[in-house]
Image (cartoon, rainbow, N blue to C red; front, top):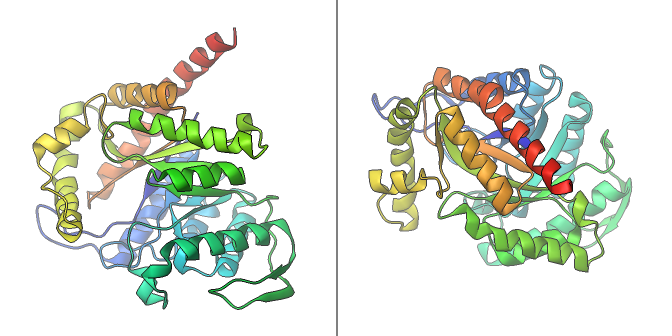
Length: 351
Protein backbone atom coordinates (compact mmCIF):
# COMPACT_ATOMS: atom_id res chain seq x y z
CA UNK A 1 0.00 0.00 0.00
CA UNK A 2 1.59 3.26 -1.15
CA UNK A 3 0.84 6.46 0.74
CA UNK A 4 1.58 10.00 -0.36
CA UNK A 5 0.54 13.63 -0.66
CA UNK A 6 -0.88 15.84 -3.37
CA UNK A 7 -1.24 19.61 -3.61
CA UNK A 8 -2.53 22.26 -5.99
CA UNK A 9 -0.07 24.80 -4.50
CA UNK A 10 -2.94 26.99 -3.34
CA UNK A 11 -2.59 30.73 -2.75
CA UNK A 12 -6.02 31.55 -1.38
CA UNK A 13 -6.45 34.38 1.15
CA UNK A 14 -5.59 33.53 4.74
CA UNK A 15 -8.95 32.93 6.39
CA UNK A 16 -7.99 34.99 9.47
CA UNK A 17 -5.95 37.88 8.05
CA UNK A 18 -7.04 38.01 4.42
CA UNK A 19 -3.40 38.12 3.35
CA UNK A 20 -2.41 36.26 0.20
CA UNK A 21 0.92 34.45 0.05
CA UNK A 22 2.97 35.10 -3.09
CA UNK A 23 3.18 32.42 -5.73
CA UNK A 24 6.96 32.37 -5.32
CA UNK A 25 6.83 31.74 -1.58
CA UNK A 26 4.19 29.03 -1.86
CA UNK A 27 6.17 27.23 -4.57
CA UNK A 28 9.26 27.25 -2.36
CA UNK A 29 7.18 25.90 0.53
CA UNK A 30 5.91 23.02 -1.59
CA UNK A 31 9.46 22.04 -2.48
CA UNK A 32 10.16 21.86 1.27
CA UNK A 33 7.03 19.74 1.71
CA UNK A 34 8.19 17.28 -0.95
CA UNK A 35 11.61 16.99 0.69
CA UNK A 36 10.01 16.32 4.07
CA UNK A 37 7.65 13.74 2.56
CA UNK A 38 10.69 11.88 1.25
CA UNK A 39 12.44 12.09 4.62
CA UNK A 40 9.48 10.63 6.55
CA UNK A 41 9.15 7.68 4.19
CA UNK A 42 6.15 8.58 2.05
CA UNK A 43 5.94 6.95 -1.36
CA UNK A 44 4.70 9.64 -3.73
CA UNK A 45 4.09 13.39 -4.02
CA UNK A 46 1.80 14.91 -6.64
CA UNK A 47 1.48 18.51 -7.87
CA UNK A 48 -1.62 19.52 -9.81
CA UNK A 49 -1.63 21.81 -12.85
CA UNK A 50 -3.82 24.93 -12.79
CA UNK A 51 -3.86 28.23 -14.62
CA UNK A 52 -5.58 30.63 -12.23
CA UNK A 53 -4.58 33.15 -9.60
CA UNK A 54 -5.43 31.05 -6.54
CA UNK A 55 -3.13 28.15 -7.52
CA UNK A 56 0.58 28.63 -8.23
CA UNK A 57 1.42 25.42 -10.10
CA UNK A 58 1.02 25.99 -13.82
CA UNK A 59 4.22 23.95 -14.41
CA UNK A 60 4.23 20.94 -12.03
CA UNK A 61 7.26 19.30 -13.66
CA UNK A 62 9.41 22.33 -12.80
CA UNK A 63 8.37 22.26 -9.13
CA UNK A 64 8.91 18.52 -8.94
CA UNK A 65 12.32 18.89 -10.58
CA UNK A 66 13.33 21.42 -7.95
CA UNK A 67 12.66 18.76 -5.32
CA UNK A 68 14.06 15.85 -7.31
CA UNK A 69 17.71 16.64 -6.62
CA UNK A 70 16.95 17.02 -2.89
CA UNK A 71 15.12 13.70 -2.52
CA UNK A 72 16.16 10.07 -2.80
CA UNK A 73 13.20 7.72 -2.93
CA UNK A 74 9.84 9.43 -3.26
CA UNK A 75 8.04 9.20 -6.59
CA UNK A 76 7.17 12.52 -8.23
CA UNK A 77 3.97 12.94 -10.25
CA UNK A 78 1.65 15.52 -11.70
CA UNK A 79 -1.82 15.49 -10.15
CA UNK A 80 -3.05 16.05 -12.82
CA UNK A 81 -1.52 17.19 -16.09
CA UNK A 82 -4.37 18.78 -18.06
CA UNK A 83 -3.51 16.81 -21.17
CA UNK A 84 -6.43 18.11 -23.24
CA UNK A 85 -4.91 21.59 -23.44
CA UNK A 86 -1.24 20.57 -23.42
CA UNK A 87 1.21 19.49 -26.12
CA UNK A 88 1.95 15.80 -25.44
CA UNK A 89 5.43 16.18 -26.89
CA UNK A 90 6.34 18.86 -24.35
CA UNK A 91 4.65 16.91 -21.55
CA UNK A 92 6.70 13.84 -22.41
CA UNK A 93 9.93 15.86 -22.66
CA UNK A 94 9.30 17.64 -19.36
CA UNK A 95 8.64 14.44 -17.45
CA UNK A 96 11.42 12.51 -19.18
CA UNK A 97 13.73 15.31 -17.99
CA UNK A 98 12.28 15.00 -14.48
CA UNK A 99 12.84 11.26 -14.73
CA UNK A 100 16.51 11.90 -15.49
CA UNK A 101 16.98 14.33 -12.61
CA UNK A 102 15.26 11.98 -10.16
CA UNK A 103 16.90 8.87 -11.63
CA UNK A 104 13.66 7.12 -12.53
CA UNK A 105 11.05 8.48 -10.12
CA UNK A 106 8.81 10.54 -12.43
CA UNK A 107 5.18 9.81 -13.27
CA UNK A 108 2.51 11.53 -15.33
CA UNK A 109 -1.08 11.63 -14.11
CA UNK A 110 -3.08 12.59 -17.19
CA UNK A 111 -6.60 13.99 -16.99
CA UNK A 112 -9.09 16.28 -18.63
CA UNK A 113 -9.03 18.64 -15.63
CA UNK A 114 -12.07 19.90 -13.76
CA UNK A 115 -10.93 23.53 -14.22
CA UNK A 116 -11.20 24.92 -17.74
CA UNK A 117 -8.99 28.05 -17.66
CA UNK A 118 -6.25 26.37 -19.71
CA UNK A 119 -8.49 25.86 -22.75
CA UNK A 120 -8.89 29.51 -23.80
CA UNK A 121 -5.37 30.27 -22.58
CA UNK A 122 -3.86 27.81 -25.06
CA UNK A 123 -6.42 28.36 -27.81
CA UNK A 124 -8.63 25.27 -27.50
CA UNK A 125 -12.40 25.03 -27.83
CA UNK A 126 -14.29 23.41 -24.97
CA UNK A 127 -16.58 21.70 -27.46
CA UNK A 128 -13.59 19.48 -28.25
CA UNK A 129 -13.09 18.63 -24.55
CA UNK A 130 -13.33 14.84 -24.87
CA UNK A 131 -11.86 14.51 -28.36
CA UNK A 132 -8.78 16.50 -27.35
CA UNK A 133 -8.04 14.21 -24.44
CA UNK A 134 -8.46 11.00 -26.42
CA UNK A 135 -6.24 12.22 -29.25
CA UNK A 136 -3.51 13.60 -27.02
CA UNK A 137 -3.47 10.54 -24.79
CA UNK A 138 -2.94 8.43 -27.90
CA UNK A 139 0.06 10.56 -28.88
CA UNK A 140 1.51 10.58 -25.34
CA UNK A 141 1.40 6.79 -25.18
CA UNK A 142 3.00 6.51 -28.62
CA UNK A 143 5.80 8.85 -27.53
CA UNK A 144 6.74 6.60 -24.64
CA UNK A 145 6.63 3.48 -26.79
CA UNK A 146 9.09 4.52 -29.45
CA UNK A 147 11.94 6.97 -29.96
CA UNK A 148 10.86 8.02 -33.45
CA UNK A 149 7.20 8.78 -33.93
CA UNK A 150 4.83 8.75 -36.88
CA UNK A 151 1.49 10.22 -35.86
CA UNK A 152 -1.40 12.24 -37.26
CA UNK A 153 -4.41 13.74 -35.48
CA UNK A 154 -6.95 16.49 -35.84
CA UNK A 155 -5.80 19.06 -33.27
CA UNK A 156 -2.02 19.07 -33.62
CA UNK A 157 0.40 19.09 -36.58
CA UNK A 158 1.42 15.61 -37.70
CA UNK A 159 4.76 14.08 -36.71
CA UNK A 160 6.63 12.36 -39.52
CA UNK A 161 9.22 9.91 -38.17
CA UNK A 162 10.82 12.42 -35.80
CA UNK A 163 12.75 11.61 -32.65
CA UNK A 164 11.58 12.92 -29.28
CA UNK A 165 14.21 13.45 -26.59
CA UNK A 166 15.39 12.97 -23.92
CA UNK A 167 14.32 9.40 -23.39
CA UNK A 168 13.31 8.61 -19.81
CA UNK A 169 15.17 6.40 -17.37
CA UNK A 170 12.04 4.28 -16.87
CA UNK A 171 10.81 2.23 -19.79
CA UNK A 172 7.99 2.90 -20.05
CA UNK A 173 7.55 6.23 -18.28
CA UNK A 174 4.51 5.65 -16.01
CA UNK A 175 1.28 7.28 -17.17
CA UNK A 176 -1.74 7.17 -14.88
CA UNK A 177 -5.28 8.16 -15.84
CA UNK A 178 -6.98 10.58 -13.45
CA UNK A 179 -10.76 10.37 -13.17
CA UNK A 180 -13.42 12.03 -11.08
CA UNK A 181 -15.54 8.89 -11.33
CA UNK A 182 -16.70 8.93 -14.95
CA UNK A 183 -17.35 5.32 -15.96
CA UNK A 184 -16.17 5.92 -19.52
CA UNK A 185 -12.76 7.21 -18.40
CA UNK A 186 -12.43 4.39 -15.90
CA UNK A 187 -13.18 1.78 -18.56
CA UNK A 188 -10.73 3.44 -20.98
CA UNK A 189 -7.95 3.22 -18.41
CA UNK A 190 -8.68 -0.47 -18.00
CA UNK A 191 -8.75 -1.17 -21.74
CA UNK A 192 -5.41 0.60 -22.12
CA UNK A 193 -3.92 -1.24 -19.14
CA UNK A 194 -3.00 2.03 -17.44
CA UNK A 195 -3.03 2.65 -13.67
CA UNK A 196 -6.05 4.61 -12.44
CA UNK A 197 -6.39 7.51 -10.00
CA UNK A 198 -9.85 8.29 -8.61
CA UNK A 199 -10.60 11.71 -7.15
CA UNK A 200 -12.67 10.65 -4.14
CA UNK A 201 -13.60 14.01 -2.67
CA UNK A 202 -17.32 13.69 -1.96
CA UNK A 203 -20.02 11.24 -0.97
CA UNK A 204 -19.10 7.79 0.25
CA UNK A 205 -15.80 6.32 -0.97
CA UNK A 206 -17.53 2.93 -1.06
CA UNK A 207 -19.55 4.16 -4.05
CA UNK A 208 -16.32 3.98 -6.06
CA UNK A 209 -15.97 0.22 -5.59
CA UNK A 210 -18.16 -0.60 -8.63
CA UNK A 211 -15.91 1.66 -10.71
CA UNK A 212 -12.86 -0.29 -9.60
CA UNK A 213 -14.61 -3.50 -10.62
CA UNK A 214 -15.48 -1.95 -14.01
CA UNK A 215 -11.86 -0.91 -14.46
CA UNK A 216 -10.60 -4.42 -13.76
CA UNK A 217 -13.22 -6.04 -16.01
CA UNK A 218 -12.22 -3.76 -18.87
CA UNK A 219 -8.54 -4.53 -18.30
CA UNK A 220 -9.16 -8.27 -18.24
CA UNK A 221 -11.30 -8.02 -21.39
CA UNK A 222 -8.38 -6.31 -23.16
CA UNK A 223 -6.00 -9.06 -22.07
CA UNK A 224 -4.09 -7.14 -19.39
CA UNK A 225 -2.81 -8.76 -16.20
CA UNK A 226 -5.19 -7.29 -13.63
CA UNK A 227 -2.90 -8.26 -10.75
CA UNK A 228 -0.30 -5.78 -12.01
CA UNK A 229 -2.66 -2.79 -12.27
CA UNK A 230 -2.65 -0.08 -9.60
CA UNK A 231 -5.61 1.98 -8.35
CA UNK A 232 -5.04 5.19 -6.41
CA UNK A 233 -7.34 7.54 -4.54
CA UNK A 234 -6.89 11.29 -4.16
CA UNK A 235 -8.79 12.68 -1.16
CA UNK A 236 -8.83 15.86 0.90
CA UNK A 237 -7.66 15.74 4.48
CA UNK A 238 -5.49 16.94 7.33
CA UNK A 239 -3.78 15.35 10.32
CA UNK A 240 -2.89 16.77 13.75
CA UNK A 241 -1.86 15.17 17.01
CA UNK A 242 -5.50 15.18 18.14
CA UNK A 243 -8.74 15.29 16.21
CA UNK A 244 -10.10 18.51 17.75
CA UNK A 245 -6.99 20.42 16.69
CA UNK A 246 -7.24 18.97 13.18
CA UNK A 247 -10.87 20.07 12.87
CA UNK A 248 -10.21 23.53 14.28
CA UNK A 249 -7.35 24.19 11.87
CA UNK A 250 -8.69 22.53 8.74
CA UNK A 251 -12.37 23.51 8.58
CA UNK A 252 -12.16 27.32 8.14
CA UNK A 253 -9.80 27.42 5.11
CA UNK A 254 -11.55 24.42 3.57
CA UNK A 255 -14.96 26.05 3.94
CA UNK A 256 -13.64 29.23 2.35
CA UNK A 257 -12.33 27.42 -0.73
CA UNK A 258 -15.31 25.09 -1.13
CA UNK A 259 -17.74 27.99 -1.01
CA UNK A 260 -15.70 29.97 -3.53
CA UNK A 261 -15.73 27.03 -5.92
CA UNK A 262 -19.38 26.48 -5.08
CA UNK A 263 -20.26 30.01 -6.22
CA UNK A 264 -18.41 29.39 -9.49
CA UNK A 265 -20.06 26.03 -10.14
CA UNK A 266 -23.49 26.40 -8.59
CA UNK A 267 -22.97 24.10 -5.63
CA UNK A 268 -24.83 24.44 -2.35
CA UNK A 269 -23.26 26.13 0.67
CA UNK A 270 -20.49 24.22 2.43
CA UNK A 271 -21.12 24.49 6.17
CA UNK A 272 -20.06 22.67 9.31
CA UNK A 273 -22.75 20.04 8.78
CA UNK A 274 -21.35 19.30 5.32
CA UNK A 275 -17.86 19.09 6.77
CA UNK A 276 -18.86 16.83 9.65
CA UNK A 277 -20.71 14.47 7.32
CA UNK A 278 -17.66 14.24 5.06
CA UNK A 279 -15.30 13.54 7.97
CA UNK A 280 -17.45 10.73 9.31
CA UNK A 281 -16.07 7.22 8.99
CA UNK A 282 -18.05 6.62 5.80
CA UNK A 283 -17.23 10.04 4.32
CA UNK A 284 -14.55 11.13 1.86
CA UNK A 285 -12.69 13.59 4.12
CA UNK A 286 -9.65 12.24 5.97
CA UNK A 287 -9.33 14.58 8.95
CA UNK A 288 -8.29 13.77 12.49
CA UNK A 289 -5.55 12.26 14.61
CA UNK A 290 -3.22 9.67 13.07
CA UNK A 291 -5.18 6.66 14.31
CA UNK A 292 -8.48 7.97 12.97
CA UNK A 293 -7.03 8.77 9.55
CA UNK A 294 -5.22 5.42 9.37
CA UNK A 295 -8.44 3.54 10.13
CA UNK A 296 -10.24 5.28 7.27
CA UNK A 297 -7.43 4.55 4.80
CA UNK A 298 -7.46 0.88 5.84
CA UNK A 299 -11.25 0.81 5.37
CA UNK A 300 -10.82 2.29 1.89
CA UNK A 301 -8.19 -0.28 0.93
CA UNK A 302 -10.21 -3.23 2.14
CA UNK A 303 -13.55 -2.16 0.64
CA UNK A 304 -12.65 -0.26 -2.53
CA UNK A 305 -9.37 -1.91 -3.48
CA UNK A 306 -7.05 1.07 -3.83
CA UNK A 307 -3.33 0.33 -3.76
CA UNK A 308 -2.18 3.95 -3.37
CA UNK A 309 -3.65 6.67 -1.16
CA UNK A 310 -2.83 10.35 -1.72
CA UNK A 311 -3.85 12.88 0.94
CA UNK A 312 -4.56 16.26 -0.62
CA UNK A 313 -3.38 18.82 1.91
CA UNK A 314 -4.20 21.63 2.34
CA UNK A 315 -7.39 22.52 0.48
CA UNK A 316 -7.19 26.21 1.38
CA UNK A 317 -4.18 28.19 2.51
CA UNK A 318 -2.89 27.04 5.90
CA UNK A 319 0.29 27.90 7.83
CA UNK A 320 3.25 26.11 6.29
CA UNK A 321 4.24 24.67 9.68
CA UNK A 322 0.81 23.03 10.03
CA UNK A 323 1.08 21.45 6.60
CA UNK A 324 4.60 20.22 7.35
CA UNK A 325 3.37 18.69 10.63
CA UNK A 326 0.53 16.92 8.84
CA UNK A 327 2.98 15.44 6.32
CA UNK A 328 5.26 14.34 9.14
CA UNK A 329 2.39 12.62 10.94
CA UNK A 330 1.24 10.95 7.72
CA UNK A 331 4.69 9.49 7.16
CA UNK A 332 5.73 8.66 10.71
CA UNK A 333 2.45 7.61 12.34
CA UNK A 334 -0.31 6.98 9.80
CA UNK A 335 1.66 5.10 7.14
CA UNK A 336 3.17 2.52 9.54
CA UNK A 337 -0.27 1.68 10.96
CA UNK A 338 -1.76 1.29 7.49
CA UNK A 339 1.09 -0.75 6.06
CA UNK A 340 1.19 -3.12 9.02
CA UNK A 341 -2.55 -3.76 8.99
CA UNK A 342 -2.77 -4.17 5.22
CA UNK A 343 0.20 -6.54 5.23
CA UNK A 344 -1.46 -8.62 7.96
CA UNK A 345 -4.82 -8.56 6.14
CA UNK A 346 -3.36 -9.56 2.78
CA UNK A 347 -1.35 -12.31 4.44
CA UNK A 348 -4.50 -13.79 5.98
CA UNK A 349 -6.25 -13.70 2.57
CA UNK A 350 -3.35 -15.55 0.93
CA UNK A 351 -3.64 -18.30 3.52
